[in-house]
Image (cartoon, rainbow, N blue to C red):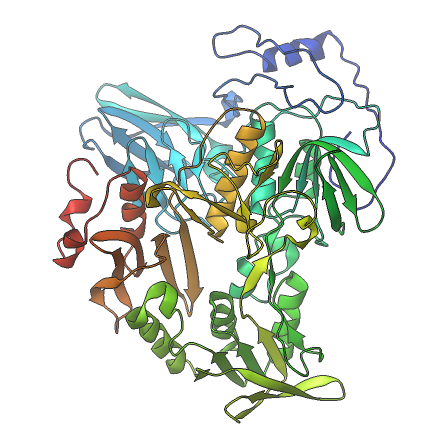
Length: 599
């Protein structure tokens, strides 16, 4: 049963006949590390969330002796404690690490976008990616913070005649990623299509990570993920950075993968309402589904442009791969106008400079990104855009869109300026996609966000929420309730929600981390800078090589950088440790505090 599908279909019951050889193989698979069979608790029918299949902590996925290679990679005394080295192992590479006098070896590339982890940050048994902040346990290779779905392969290390020997699978060396072992669905319900143990509304990273975490923890009951999207979960941040990407290139998990682990995805399915008393979700097409536990992870929706002509053709709010592809096609050698100097708007503008005849950006602020990155950093980025032929019309708004034959042709500003436009992209902000919950009894604040506690629980028992739709207590900001619409944070929300759907009582404790990319330059950001009152900049803004520390009173609350890796990941690790970074620590330009004892 299970699998990935778009439309309802009859439930199929598969019966597997196991002979003696197959039985032995199954028994072998269920062995725990000490060689004893892990007991399976009895199945409770009709949506119990207590059906957990115990799993070994670590397993060797590559047991074919012909696939294994072993080489000496260095002398036993070559690395000091706290050092990492990328080493050659036959047909590939591994990351060799020495901590507390012991060696270990894992994959050398971050599974997210392939960053070299040797350039990352090693702290207290985990390595943090220098590009986007994902963290991996050096003893197991397991992913511990995000973004990304996969873990790293773990390689065997031994010392022989003062040589460090690494034994690894050729397959693992080539793939440089590992999927954690996951359970499958074993429960058959009386009304299996119209009821589920866990229902996830939304197919973004929060929903997908929640589903995968449940399976990784041995959960064997039904999981259904429903979404308004046409597609399976995909890497949405790539849409604005690479408008011509195809859905096959950005899909996070294939149909076959989801089917293999019984994660059901129902696409093109819009929720109309939620009845928390009867635990039923009603859909717009008339279908309804009962649930035992519910995760709301519907993300956000773009704010529409409120002016005459907003409904003309070739006016887009970038939301889907189809939107992205159409924008790129329409802008080719023509005039593109971007309404809103947001991160998405600016990324689209940067991408189109090599394609369009002209690119114009309209914004209500006097400097792009001023509220997030500060005036000086924002001005530096603005100069980079102007150097690449982008024209800005700031402290301005759209008065009207004018069309011809139903298609946009001109954008009229409130200042009176008229811009030629063959395609118009609107990126003026987003709001949480929670309007379907207004009569549900689930608490919402005045802006439509869902307040949750450290366990990602709403005010309604059994109902969890994650991702862009929530406000949650941010540990390193003294548990201040915040909304953080970052890709990384949505992953972590999904994981914490899953663990607490299983009743594990795990609280969220992570440092926000995001990035943007324009003209081949990446800006990294960690922390939560809301309310900063000063910006301390080290480096050269004109050369686009800098680090900016955002302070409130005498404390550093966030950091951004360009061409200064891995400084943001280092600061993120300090923040994650619970250590406070003082303003005086960053004012002198001396970064030794990052490497001193206790960091």
